[in-house]
Length: 585
Image 1 (cartoon, rainbow, N blue to C red):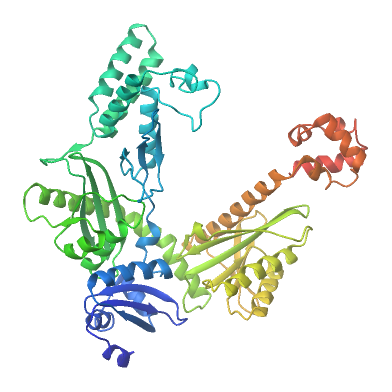
Image 2: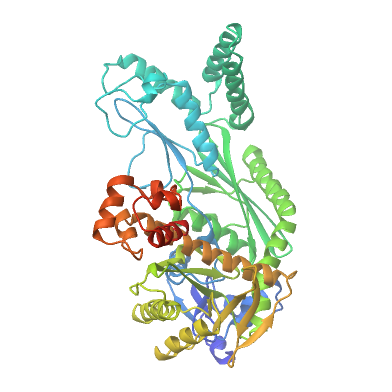
């Protein structure tokens, strides 16, 4: 490592840190590769950075011509390799917007996956809270009889009959009325709430005067929602330029970032993110802002950022105006965002530490118990069937103690009989043959929800594929609760303190894989017809099946029958078989 570090160039570029298995665990960029990469090894680190450095055994680097090229390359490498210490691009979600369709008969909808190549004439947001976006759409649909359906029907629907649609499918509606509604809605979404609040006030007074108090109360709640939730903070800016304001605060090894979305001189929404600090503050904040717009977030005309950020780099990378205000109202907005970032970090810090104790620290405790060098990626399996039919398996993935739901997988098993070992053999083979074939990331650990037999079957398959992945099991007690960890070779039972965070993590893992598999099993079963269900009951042949189908028609109706009622069609022992089968279905 020392020899390799001494040969690093002073050019800009990207570096890729690797662990003992050659897996890329962190990607960063640097103006000066030699200075930046050496800084990981020639100084003392704490927190996540120390943990990262402890796992580095090798690195690669790529030299580029400019800082912008290094930022572009960094973003692409993070997307390609999904390193475990680059958490920003992995954790954030896309944002919902409200769209008013530019059609003859407008329609309001909440949209999340924004197509940046498409021109949206009336798009409002972003709304970090999807509930607020839907609530706003429901409010406007309540106040204005807009079109609700996706396709025109041949006759008016329920919305027409309750006064929330003008029946555009069968009636010719005055265009001037439609344009007036559209203008009112646009004014509202641009921040002018006076029209709608006045309208609600007048309607509320009318309903109260007619002693329709329930209706008046409903209108009062709508008014409160607008006044409390949608009456956003006015900012002292002289123009109506759409801006995003970034502020930050660092403490205890964490960075908190606060973003204000300013539209039409009002703070319409805000977003915050708290994450462990691994790189230096300037690099982390610059990377965060760059990654922020790689999601489904439409760029504003201008971004205001703190002085530690390289504004010229972001300006060129994002292709929008990025400014560092030094004084005036814009500087006050940066300070306000930073103050909010500080408040958020102080409020969330204890919750973050508790969450880490239940996830990352518990995961680390499991690593120590299993005597593993590293433990990050765990894959868990569970099987489900109904008397040997509708045989399925589910796989859930936990990374650093947290579920990674995008990596969950479902397996429909070809063996249609009650054979837990055969099911385990098939699902493990299919999963890890695919891992080898498609060069997917191997997990650090496999957990099977079963006893010694299932563990041995899984280990045999893993060994036959030439893989070296530890396999352990979770044993349940008589109350179907997690009780012991089965590990090592020969297999040993390891007691887990039921008050420990590790116990709660293992229990959560077991519950998650069981719930995921059972839900898939229910989906598969619901697709089966009543005829195929009856085929699985001993004593029911073609003639009896036809009679049952003719008389009862649905599974729901059959399940409601008692044994004596079933005996009107079936012999006693067959009625018992069917009743027992349906009870578990």
